[in-house]
Length: 67
Image (tube, rainbow, N blue to C red; front, side):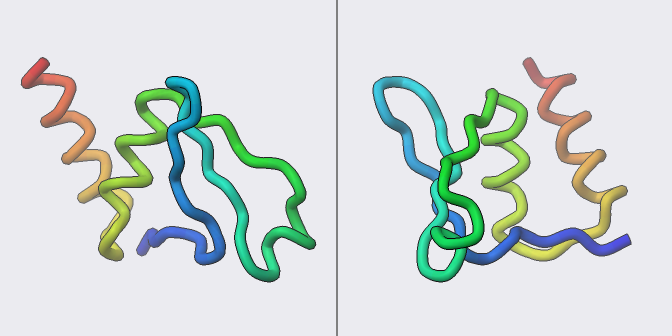
């Protein structure tokens, strides 16, 4: 399965908390930001390019094993 970012959101850090904030038409659809934990931020940043779910899982596994 191919995975990519949902367009219409940007990642911002406010007071040490990471949010996905809607912009454009998404503001009308989703009025609140979405709080992301460390894993969510990692996944969002990795999905700058489209990849398979297996590739994403491998990258997450590699990151966990290197910590």
